[in-house]
Image 1 (cartoon, rainbow, N blue to C red):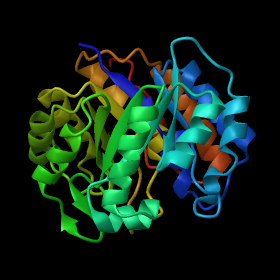
Image 2: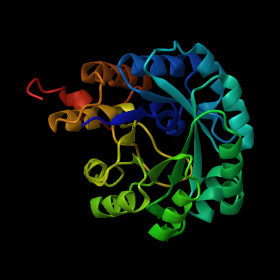
Image 3: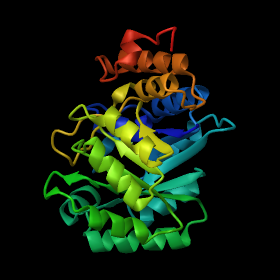
Length: 285
């Protein structure tokens, strides 16, 4: 069995860091991840610099990437303006994020849920690029609490031409909930955070339910500026280690991932949330 991993570290990982890394440095991270064999890398976020300054200079990041055959480079958009910038940059795929609740949509995208839904429809209709639709706070919202799975299923069903990813943005889901929602929506992808230490168990549950695409972040970087106490994504190298041990192919070089997280640790000056990069890849895996 083979699955695809999308490393979102250059976007979701770095957007919650206290410092803003230069575009050239963020491009270097993208290049390192591509060299490690990641089939997908989310390279940049096309949002307003005054709202998420860590993502300023998205076009400069994209321009500095050394494109690698076999890697698809995507970017995040929250509205049509963001999509226009993304499309002009030359990236391969658009990741449009749509919140499952009105409160989170207003905080994260500065638009109501209905406005965001209309924007998603417009982008998907216009897009010459393949579109991933990420449904954020699909399992729970920091402002509205538990999210009705029926609401998420309805959102997922509205855009049959888009690739759907279910996001546990604040890390509240448990394996049964993930298994049930992936099976109900037939979503091919999940975006999991490890806030309450359930992220890896949730990844296994998603795999068992049929998911074949996993968003991860090198070193376990991540978090959302608009989700209080939200912590990082599941670490790319930790998931690759888990999957490899169970015979699931990813095509990713684990040693190169570990080197990248060690580099990131030095760059950011702190220990990261991932564990495999500190423990090392076991020779018996």
